[in-house]
Image 1 (cartoon, rainbow, N blue to C red):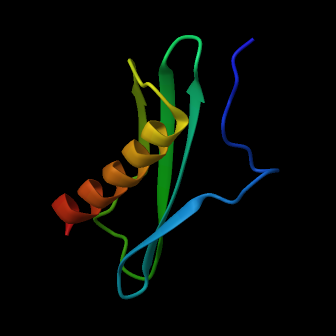
Image 2: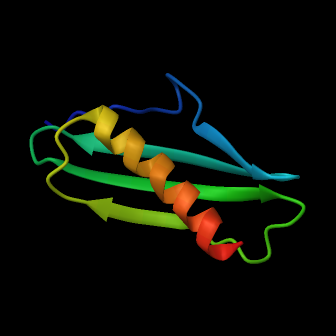
Length: 83
C-alpha cells in the first residue's frame, strides 16, 4: 500500500511569500514504493493575475524530503518566470 507523506490532518501546506501581497501554498505526496510524487500549489493575494496554479508529477523521487524540495522549487520558479 502506498505511503503518502503529507496530509491536511497532520500539517498545513508550506507557504512561500513571493512579493507584497502574494503567497504560494504548496504541498506534495510521495509514494516510496514507486518513487512517484505529485505536487501542487496555489497563489493567493492581491497581485496574482500572471501566476498560475501549480500541478505536476515526477518520477524517480528518492524521498519525501526531495518531493517537498521540488514543490518549493517549482513555486519559486513559477513566481520568478511569471513576474
